[in-house]
Length: 220
Image (cartoon, rainbow, N blue to C red):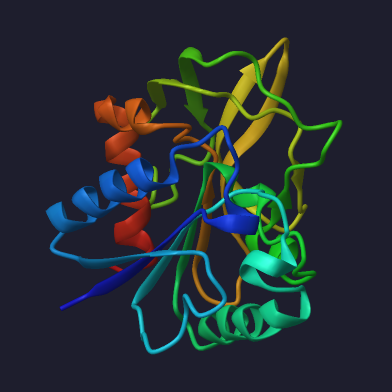
């Protein structure tokens, strides 16, 4: 059976604006609908130990590093090395929403994901009903979709690598801001900026997008 690992924000990778536990639970439900068994783990230094996932979903954010609680940057080196090794071995990755603002202590994560939240530059309007536009309709992850209508945040002015393939944008004041893209790899990597909270997954078109991303990542 296909097995996914969902990394929910915890400690240095848990921010106060996202309910990581609720999001991880909802994602696990959607994966179960696809016949995928899921393990949810908080982002602790041993979160990648003793597991061989077929898919890694990163639903972590930016918290407060506390060496007395969950270790120093040096303590986290094996975690980041293990994640890099999983990707290098071909395990696909889906980064959700605040994933561009996590693992700031890992110089490899931003290039791997294909983008970053930049403090003081990246921002979002208040959460509201929003429409996101598909710009690469020939890609299997969005084929047949033209837009996603959802109650969510619109991430704007993310730092995005020129090497990614942008699939979906948020249009704001005449500018198209990439919010869903395929990173160059190695392997299959998708970043999806939607999903501030579980309300996002009440949208049929958003759920359709998520399922398509997962199916493409797993070559289904």
